[in-house]
Length: 209
Image (cartoon, rainbow, N blue to C red):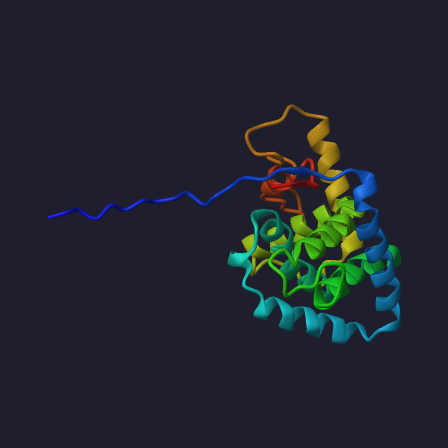
């Protein structure tokens, strides 16, 4: 009796593409246009559209580069919904523009194609990198809220957070580091328990894997 032969093929391939500044120009221009359009649109409508788009998105089916960037969308939506975290107008414009671009399906790469969300991920990364300090401060604040949901964080403004962060960082710089990044520098309402986001932020955001 002849045995059936089963052949298995590994269809996984790793592709790395380094995008230089010239290659990123169309995406930077798209961010500028989207930001300008967002200023003329209803902001609540953009946020609602982002929520709906996120709910419909099958993130697991996306390439790793796209998953990593678009996983920031819920945090972005939270920022727009937080009454006490008011970022400067230029920051708000770019981040809202990136969200509006994510909502729009007919963009540089139509979203119904296999790599259709690559441009959305690139535009979002451009906006986040442009305002990296503001974005990291927001992530730190959200880490605190998640770790201490019952703490006195309600009504804690962005300005107060940045002042406390600056004071705590000054305390850390003036003394040797310990196992915990801010061990001994926590005081009052500033209890920055985690700095893990820093290790997870890509150093070279446009090396597409």
